[in-house]
Length: 270
Image 1 (cartoon, helix red, strand yellow):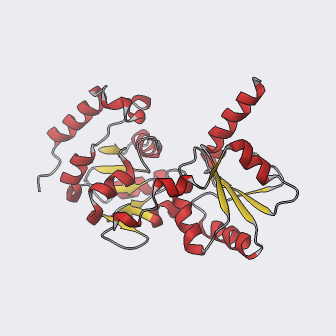
Image 2 (tube, rainbow, N blue to C red):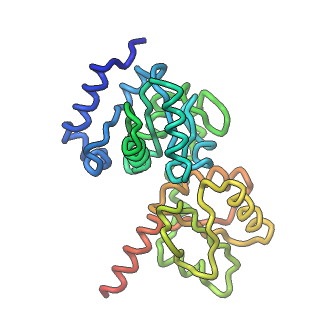
């Protein structure tokens, strides 16, 4: 297999800065114009000659990840140190990935690595779903590989669990309904207090044991789990854990925290 040479690296960098057409489908390229990226086909061709890093949470990684990838969550304080240690052990290009085209963690991880002097790093912004569908033999779902794509939870099944922020809040705070409200945003996304002070619990997707504790508590106490993230996409990974635990009564906030703020803004303009 042909290795990523210095010339090819330069070509990828040049392409990542100049491809204005692709930026429309990949918003991170416009938001982070100085961060180099690698396309799906290129990563597949060069797969054995790069080090792939999953910048997502532990739970997301354990649910579905690229074969042989290393999990270094960008939200963790240890991120820079672990990436520096990884670079010290290899001269291969390091490629960071996250959920998909609208997930910015791969770009944030690449940018942070660059800022801390780690060179030859790239963002793979097509994400884990596109990778899995294109390369099922190079992906791991719930510990099994190759991945049977049919075992991925369909988007329509996922979306059935969505509630509009207003409906979500009505159920979450109803005095007659037994609920357990869970904010699963990471520390960067949360940046302060949640939406339901005194009523909700906070457990980021990096805190696997804590999440499982709350899920079990809700099931045992027959409470409805009301869960929200930043944009309504990370909870897709939590759904695998919920289903595996046997949870039946749970809902997600449509479009997450951003949807909440948007609904609040719309209400204020009435």
